[in-house]
Amino acid sequence: MAEHEDEHVRVAVIGSGFGGLGAAVRLRREGITDFVVLERADSVGGTWRDNSYPGCACDVPSHLYSFSFAPNPEWPRTFSGQQHIRSYLEHVADTFGLRPHLRFGSEVKKAAWNAERLCWEIETSGGNLSADVVVSATGPLSDPKIPAVKGLDTFPGKVFHSARWDHDYDLAGKRVAMVGTGASAIQIVPSIQPQVARLTLFQRTPPWVMPRVDRAISGLERSLHRAVPATTQLRRGLLWGIRELQVQAFTKRPDELGFVEKIAKRNMARAVKDPALRAKLTPDYRIGCKRILLSSAYYPALARDNVDVVASGLSEIRGSTVVAADGTETEVDAIIFGTGFHVTDMPIAERVVGADGRTLAETWKNGMAALRGATAAGFPNCMTVIGPNTGLGNSSMILMIESQLNYMADYLRQLDVLGAGTALDARQSAVNDWNRKVQERMKRTVWNTGGCTSWYLDAAGRNTTVWPGTTTEFRRATRRVDLAEYEVVRAPKASRTPGTGATGAPAPAPAASRPAEVQA
Image (tube, rainbow, N blue to C red; front, top):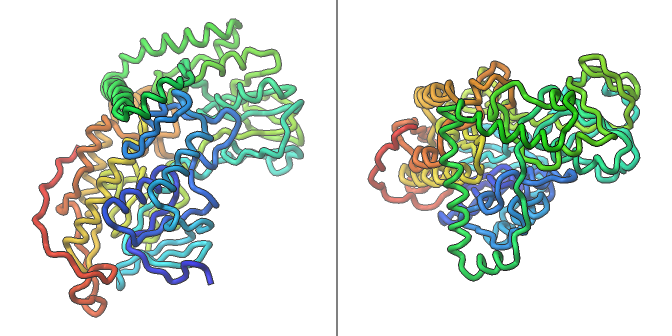
């Protein structure tokens, strides 16, 4: 029998990346120890465990890309690499005593709401369990997307996605096709270019690339941060403040980004002297419409003699020949897909079944929408960390995660106040109202007006991923749960146990309602 067969917990967290570990720490800080973290892999880390490709690093400064409650004075660089971020998350798991709560090898196959028991019944690859509350922290960058390319299944060489890098395959001397020009590709290209015989980059849309001002953090700086922790917080605060000031240009005045485009073009011109290549690499949309990428090595690598840039997407594969949409043919030994993830169609949504028997994916078939980025109507006691419209285009997602953890904590407090045999279900009207206001604000942002097609948009062209405001605004909007936005669901009388809470503990005494939070 599996270790947690038929176990019941108050909270089940899905995923052990930043969102899942952050949720676990917050639960412990709230005095809640009756929880598990379900993880399909054999270690923590989320996207920073899965993405181990050459050159993998963060494009947010290290001191901002870490938890406010777990500052790290030992970051080695201003922009840290994958191995350092993964080590940081392992450190968080150890420091905050999360190991006993972790359930590795437990991929969630299905989570279904039981209206009689008011709990979630969860099937995992490691056994079954139930929970009063589910917190989904799988993240939008967890399931790789490989396009359906004609003939791919007949390719005789090596094929893998950047997030599933095959470290046993030696690229030295090989002819390699790199498909995609996103954040992963611009780090992979300069890392593998010196060792491959030939590198062919398939580029559907050129990205805007800004210089990456990265450097080693000196021993003196680290010593200062260790000795005077306030200096770490000051550094983090300055990095945050600069990015808060930049938000207006992205959300309200995209025309102001023209100056940033000039910097990006100069970055390209310094490395790429060939006018024809520069023309291929110059975007025709407003900077910021797609994710702005940071690299000081990408353009120099593309200018090397063993690199070809095909300004067209991959269309077909014939044996060892890869064929672009413009007809360009190239013989290769390996194909690397840097083609992103299932962001607006997250697979976990197909496995979560709500009160009416529909999956979350079915509920979101016309576009993802959740109240304050956290809760969907018809899915009681189910919350999402990094849910719809919580992404950022210019700052650290850790800021958004911590705001959502505030909301999660208050949600659980409200359940305690309501007492035994109750659950909270977001009102459809509240979800609609929140989403309407978010989408109205989205209309003038660079992500919607910049003239590009990006992974921020779903199949219908709606921006269901990015938050159209500052992190300060989002924190205000998620500070408290407004009970007026929820229906209180009560268990059938036969299922109730008088005088007990959801997990059998004595129910707390009623508390005064908190004032409703003003919506953004």
